[in-house]
Length: 109
Figure 1 (tube, helix red, strand yellow):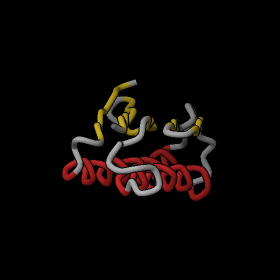
Figure 2 (figure 1 turned 30 degrees about the vertical axis):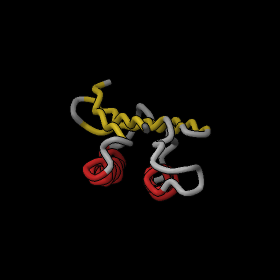
Figure 3 (figure 1 turned 90 degrees about the vertical axis):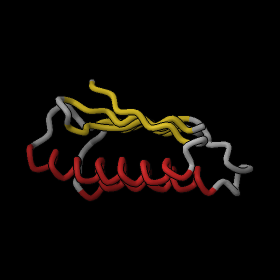
């Protein structure tokens, strides 16, 4: 199962962490894991390269952690929230039909 946590500060999205493999299918054929990976990596690209933020980022096999920097302008935070909330809604959509393989949690930091 892949466990995904969306981090929030005062109710606003500030980052996420995903860990584990879904176990939906064998490695290389696991479309649920591939979808999660594509969405989380797209969010990182959006935050770092499109918005230009220097996120705290860790990526390993079956693990990704991404957190916004502490000092973020209101405009950048707004844009980052669009990306992070889109990620959350997209992952929630996947979880609706594949709930045995993905667990979503919101956590206040």
